[in-house]
Figure 1 (cartoon, rainbow, N blue to C red):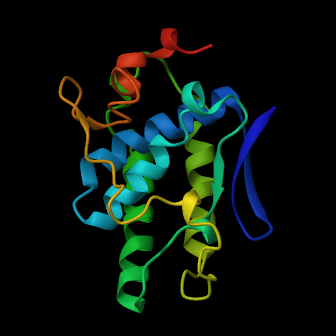
Figure 2: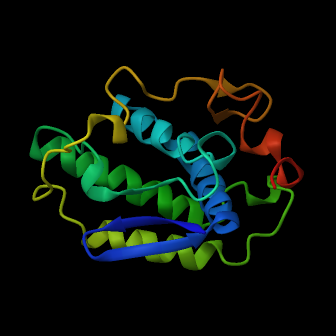
Figure 3: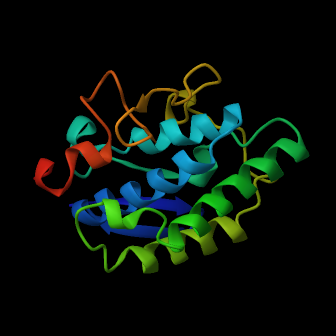
Length: 169
């Protein structure tokens, strides 16, 4: 059982453990860069990928399900944020704090970055299911004080670093 992140026919399939790592390294980067309301909405989407809460093998998203914005400028800015966050993750931003070595994370991040780079949010249909992407008032604004990471507080006791590798199945 695993999870998929995709754009059209293109998919990044990850095992449950691979999904945990992929989300962990992206959350580290997104937390460092998030400033705009849309950025916090994307951060919330990442926190929704928490398999401990949502169930193993029950997470993932398609880029078409994301509300990239109403204007060309908003869509371009949102795409740029995801690419910048992925690039920061690829530079191993704060990976030394994970408590484990994610040897396959770079390959997954490169594939995700290529998928996002080739995705045209201007051509994406309006999301059909508003429950698949956090709404304007649902951005991740809770932060783990200890680790300075956006998190699923109050749904979890801490962030991905608080849970650590021992906190997962």
